[in-house]
Image 1 (cartoon, helix red, strand yellow):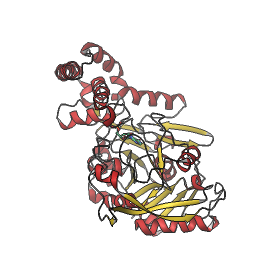
Image 2 (cartoon, protein in one colour):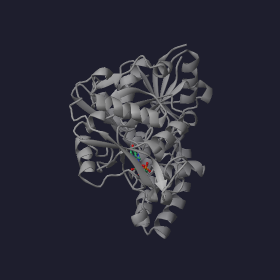
Image 3 (tube, rainbow, N blue to C red):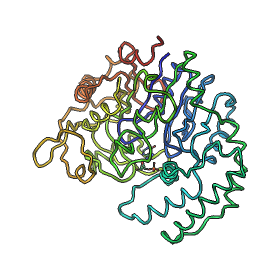
Image 4 (spheres, helix red, strand yellow):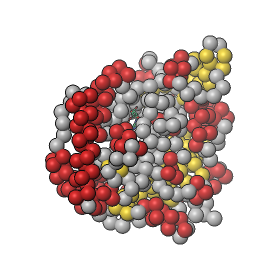
Length: 437
Ligand code: IMP
């Protein structure tokens, strides 16, 4: 068996959706471990583009089982919308999709409070996806959350809802001056979706344990990225869960000793959505060219993504935090037309190099990225399928990235389609992720 984690090593949107879709055939089960419908996995199959927010893209592969783990927060309406769309396309979900009975439910008051809080913060807002993710995780930690399994007993559900709503309505009216919400209306809406959610409910930790014992392999899929991790990211401009590899165990119920490796995903440049420091951000025509060519607009919110040069300080940090086994570089083709490509090799503050990655966003705002310049290849790489056929400058660029991040690169993605990928099958680190001992 081989259980592997796929994790974003930047601020999300690294192209995890395509890579997970590509390697799913080598696994039996795909499980998501954190986040919610704030994520957006874009997968292109043939000429069709699909964006999935909650359900792992493994669902598009007949015969594969998909799990939404206990660490994920679930908006039941978003879940059922995806279920409906997939079933309309003729996909069989019965026995192939399992949702953890321990996953927490996003409630309407989570969205209302998030909207009010972002408004209160004004200029200092996080720039969230407005899906109620943060307030839902807050309730989980405060031990007042409502979980998928609670939908089985709607009387008890109503009691919890009423108790929570008493508090939430006070917060909404007295602190934010917002409108109250009605518990009967909420109960009715959740009553209507309950059967649709319960249809997929399972003790997914138990399921994954059994699958592992039976020698089946599991791909653990993280959403967002390491720098958006609640503990290791650019706090407070982060999401509210452990997006880095560490979250895979707590978010699914597999133990650390049951994980065989970690596949990091990184773009050939850097992007970020929402507020927060971004040392290599480009506010010029190069940034605009990358945004245009890379179609860098949020898959969930449609917001234009901030774009900048590859940041190896971020890359090295993420390689360590996640204990990366090997790395995937995506969207290399987006750089095809550039004359010069820069790489940030580290940061300086007042002329002195900075050793560890700054914990303080104010400090990260002030660092000076140290750049080295690489010549662009200025050639179309879109049809390339062999590493040796990449332009020499592109190979040099990749070698340099691997060297400064101290992690080997074993997959290179050159476009959204499945076949626009170079997989270095001979990489021993990649083989260790896929091997079945
Ligand atoms: P939240 O996850 O909606 O609470 O948003 C917190 C921060 O994470 C914001 O900066 C969002 O833009 C960012 N974020 C959340 N999900 C994603 C994602 O899937 N890709 C990129 N950024 C994300």
